[in-house]
Length: 353
Image (tube, rainbow, N blue to C red; front, side):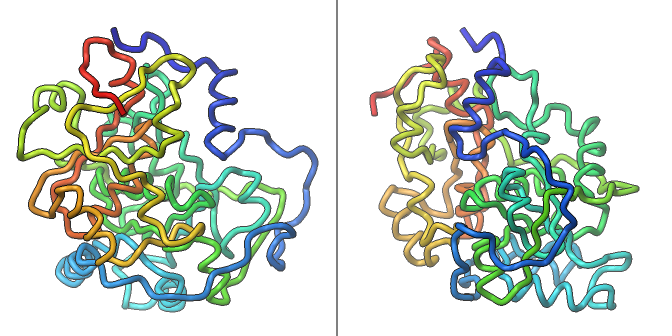
């Protein structure tokens, strides 16, 4: 039987705190937004480094040259700086302004230090609060997507650069979401705030929440095929040699039963690559393409295969999706119901971990 109710509010708050975000709002404040030194006790910046030559990023650049819309999936601090310097010159599509930088960190971290000029966005706003399995993307995006994109400040030609303090896990999910509704001008900032600071970028902090200005009109919502695989299809294709299932959970995430709602195990036939193993540092910067390609090849994966990405929650699938797409995997779909649904349904098969 499927989960019959969402995670209760009290349990959800504790659960989110366990994810590393926390939900507590800071009392007091009223401090003016200021440009400042790196906040006390925070991690230092990382040395500047250009994004590696990922084959999937080259394809995105080609799209941009052809249609003037797509941008690379992964950008570095120098790229962001150059785009800001260029706006609003003719080097950007008509109507464009400087990139909209969205920080998807918890509000406490956002207020403590962010890329200069960044606005705050919260990944929970992109999930469906009524779906039984927690973390699934908003349903009926054709109807509900325009309001979401407006709140995020995403217009038809807005360039979005996203990052967070959790190794860009939720930033990648937002980029996946934007690309899934046809907005190709969305990228992850490699290394996030640490890389920006290491490249000499300005940092702001303050107690006031800075939301992006609403987009009017918002970007059009054109749901794309090839971004999501559902429970029924995944069940029916178990053992299909043309489909590989990549389990991106860590050992702790695999052991997490979501408050007794899920079984312990894996989808039969899945291969395992915990998402942190694709990173080269705590800032969220990715390992070199050759290293990543070797790891995936060792699991029997190649860009010619279709891959379904599984995580503990649907909202956690964006980072492995990004890695695969950067490596030139063109047929990558996320299993958005994730282990939260599969593991809770006793009618679905599992294999031991």
